[in-house]
Image (cartoon, rainbow, N blue to C red; front, top):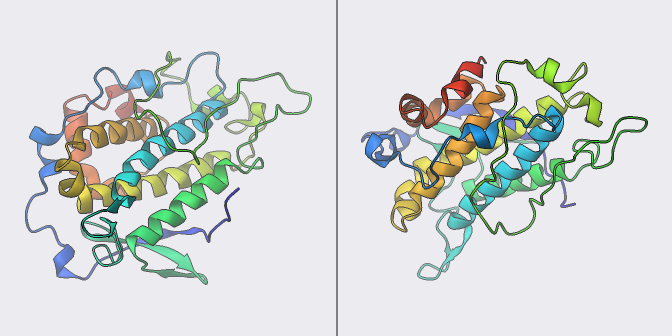
Length: 279
């Protein structure tokens, strides 16, 4: 397990730097560019299969979404041979910004603005630490309980395929509590009581990484190397899961809300996911 890093700050701050204000409309907020490389109904990637317990399915989704996000982050983390450093570096991205927002990290109990590459690395280590902690993501069947199918995947390796694997959906109308088979999500499969909250915290940090990718790196490099469609596909899968299982409050989606609205309006994000999103 990689060394754990301090917990990320729950809050974000409004940037007072006028240069971070969106003077011109972002191209990724235009319907013309809101297309995906993956076709079909994203609900087939998000909906819980009938034979998989909800905690297991959320654990699988967290691992899968982190694999996809890692692939997108590597695009800005690879060293540019012309510059001798990554495109996302301390000079180009001195803060973890996304439009008008600047995200902070807790240091010594206080929120601190740190360079985006440092923030992203800390998030990645923090997520891997959570996923590899058996007290948070158990890998052994609960003592005395029924056997279950456990989530597979390794978020520490290099992603080999950025297309999510589809599985069949289950009921779209049951609550998380009824689907979990216990008093909390994942209880019947041995997940701790705070597992659902941990998933929400991970999703929040993943969203911040996507927000930075779009606002600061959509043009360079994603548009320039023609990988913006791939980025959109990964993001739509992520938002579909986040909305369908109500894992991300609307207020946290603000930096990318215009793009999400386009995907919702064009039903790229399935209506069933929108209906399940209440927070």
